[in-house]
Length: 385
Ligand code: GLY
Image (cartoon, protein in one colour):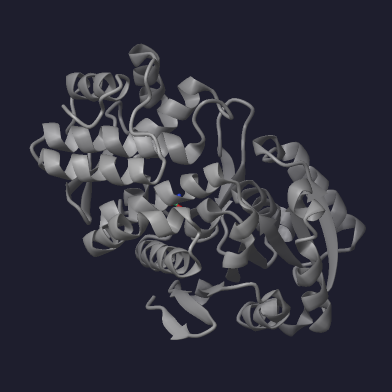
């Protein structure tokens, strides 16, 4: 799980026995992608028999000609790629679009040697990954995440799926990729708001697992926002190392270990749901407010001092992320929290910090604690309680 610094790329291993794989963090070297895909395939049952691939991307990335070097590189290693372009946005994460991918695979006589490459953000990774998990009971999958959020979170760990019209991510599977190819060059065209949303998940890793990393982020917030390549590389690399460790310890979120990745998400999901998906709060922004709210909960339990909450709020604000959600209705937020699928036997579970770098999954917060922190973050001065 340690990164090996073999410039110009770094590699992180996700240790999962027979399902182990490598994450490469590189800078604009897509001509090497084919060789990476071949080596990744060689470690799977598909092996050298792979001669074709379905390369799934979205219209924005296709317009930027992003798939072309990946197509060329796959051809250079004897893999014939068929490009499938889906509409951008969360609506593509549907059974209808998955069915379209199945049609494309059938049309190409795909079999269990056919590679699926997911080139895009979280939606593409989840959708293409779901098709790979289910078609012919499982095709090899390589993730090429192009947003910071997908690079540091959804591309690693094997969670794939589509949305039910009423519940996000309800229909899915665990299907580990054969490899993850992170090209920091793809971040150049990422809108600022999406970059900031990815940074919210980066901050999360500091809070849950690594106080030194948190302090590094405090020092480098300006560089990160300015898209300094070295700062982004350090942030992505450390985030995926930490995610790889957690996934290696609890692949299917069964022991509570992987659940720590949900810090900020119990309240964050509620904020997204109440504000309306695609509305005032993007996922990363809702998670930022969720992390602040959940830190206030930890403070109410006496687990952390105000100073920790203040440092988190200051860092998020420096990264251009919100620390509160003024005007959202408490009752609706509370109802949404109770609907969250991670609740067990009526108790709401939260991942809360004991200190920076150390968290615990707990159902200790009482209804009045939850109400109190919702009240804090729905007013404008969230840094004080
Ligand atoms: N996004 C949380 C996880 O992968 O478990």
